[in-house]
Image (tube, rainbow, N blue to C red):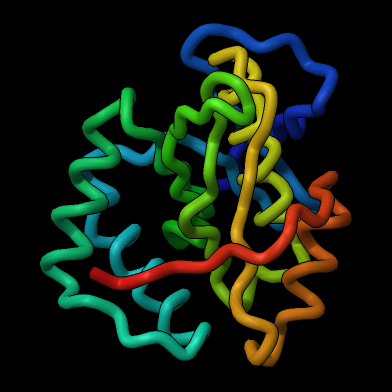
Length: 180
């Protein structure tokens, strides 16, 4: 396999550019973050399915997840799907939706899904996906990014919380839901 040229990780102080194409490199394992395209729909849906299974959930049918991924990928107004790409394929996925709220006030990004392939965890792939989202959110002049943590019964809850805290998030209280 050929090696990709090294690139730098976006930093929180970097100047946002229109339509940024963020990227990252870690030690000898190279990968880059890029916006997902329609050719990534299946990989994105499979990744989010893996995330839901790991969280102990019951994922929807794969076809329904692919349709949702395709819609989000095709709608810049709704949000963004970012993928971490390595030589062997997609090794990380981040899906975020754009939200409007009075309490913010204005728009912000809400992370819906963040998954990194097990073999790639601990290599800053998740942090690279977050950095790319932060860069996009700043370019859209959003003042915040939010995420809901899994339930405390999730075996890796403490590690998940520590990951987000290490990446600049602060506690904002638990989120609740009601299925309709």
